[in-house]
Image 1: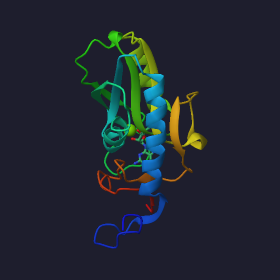
Image 2 (image 1 turned 30 degrees about the horizontal axis):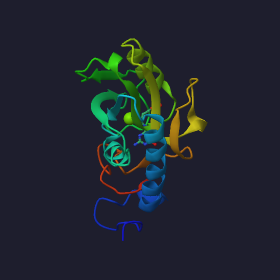
Image 3 (image 1 turned 120 degrees about the vertical axis):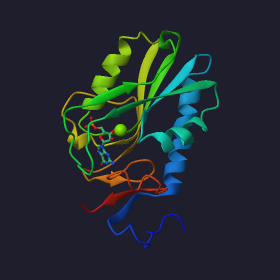
Amino acid sequence: MVDTLPVSFGYENIKRVIIPENELKARIAEVGKCISLEYSEKPLLLIAILKGSFIFLADLCREITVPCEVEFMRSSSYVGNSTVSTGNPKDIFGIDKDISKYHVLLVEDIVDTGKTLVRVTEQLKKLNPLSLKVCTLLDKPERREVDFSPDFALFIVPDVFVVGYGLDFDEKYRNLPYIAEVSL
Ligand code: 5GP
Ligand code: MG
């Protein structure tokens, strides 16, 4: 039973499931098909922003039926158990490829204020990819502080702090197979 709440020790803060596992799977399959159509015959590079997108990337890339390569980068503006961005971001590009030879699709867990993706896309554009688009699992448009719209947003979520399926609170809950709201 994956969509019921675990009652074991350490999961007391999980308030409710927002997106169950079967809905995640179905929507990712749908978007994987769109991406496959859009990038057929194009050299596709998926760049996942760690750590939050690691599970989404793993599932999404297996729904993509055209050849693609994968790279990872890190971007973090949270410290410890804070749920508010420090506004002092650190980006670490671990990409050892010439991205000017690729159509790049950035894979992100969630767009909140939009600041991370504005910053990261500006930096990546300087490396002249053939094209650059953004695919995010979750979008919280109510929280937007800068003008940014992802090209693919799989689910719109309300303005609550969510965890699971790669997303953490204080590094925990990434292993939940669904998206849930935590009570803080
Ligand atoms: P932004 O720069 O758009 O404000 O923040 C994006 C980052 O904030 C996301 O990649 C994610 O790491 C984090 N974030 C924003 N909202 C949430 C949330 O509800 N839950 C979790 N776990 N992380 C969030
Ligand atoms: Mg993130």
